[in-house]
Image (cartoon, rainbow, N blue to C red):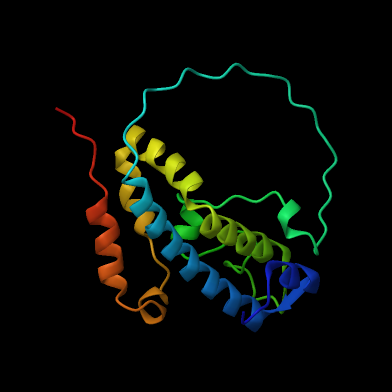
Length: 175
């Protein structure tokens, strides 16, 4: 509770660079741990039959509003497979090759924080989806174990934790 709940982070609107980087660092470590836990849970799910493609339907735009004090209504999702920017240590909305900023929007971090909490509270939902994706594309398995630089310093027995997650997953038998 170093930063309060996601609603407290969102209520701040902006964070100073130091606080933003500190929260981002903790979120990255928490997300890396959660990906490993979900991979362990996903190992229990067998491969499913390939689903038929869904029929397309027309999407209608609906106005969306967010209230900082109601994180349970936020539209967030925990991502097990990261895009190349997050794997490289960069972050969408965070400092990149541009001059360092003094203030950052708190909203993206509040959303990631809420998504992490939801994944922790209901891991089977995410594990079932991850198992289906890994059975369909086993080559994505190593990308689950990307870790931020501070991961080894903040997680006790970090290598053993990762090894357990890798051992639990049995790649599909191709014979």
